[in-house]
Image (cartoon, rainbow, N blue to C red; front, side, top):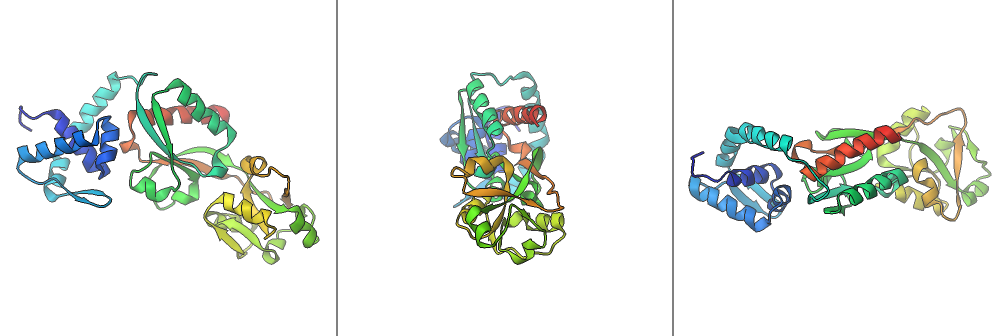
Length: 294
């Protein structure tokens, strides 16, 4: 790096290299996308080489960019760590936090925390997205909330928030039709249609000791509730969300005779090295909130 080079050019380079996305890099550095693009072009001019190649989903670094990144990443980390130690995130700070939270996991206390954060930091914007793993892999969201099993096999940072309480549910009409009460035997799960989120199948089999085959596997827990309301079978659901979904009291809680269903870990997955200052402040507060609340 020569003495005439503006350090902001290298800030832009690092952000683009790590996110593979000019817009995300701009959000991290709190500048415009065009400013990021101009910085990259100027750095390429000074170095006399192409650093990134664009494509439909973002950009990819060239071999020269990889060499440059490996040479300066440690120096960049030392500088940004030093800045973080002296800069405070205040109520007047700006930022953007992007979340993905399935409807069944948006429990009342979690909403309370988000609303309180919004009041404390009114200049921080929030975006709520649908989807988890793919968006987090592409750094299109900062945090993905879901059960721990969803993130198995991925190299995300994970923070355990609380343990969700799984329950069995069925419609009143389904119980009458099959001459059942609200207490069922584990073996009933072998003979009755079971509706379950596909990520819970292995866990439910372990909890009951039964190798049952689900009648319907869904991609979300809220879909489970909708199928149960239509009298299509017994569903696995979360107790925390049951009363909010069960507005008409058409669905009832079931007890599984002799079996206690263990709680499922609910986690917040993220890529810590890519979090903005606003996102880091949100995560720190969330961890503290969950420790006190749960």
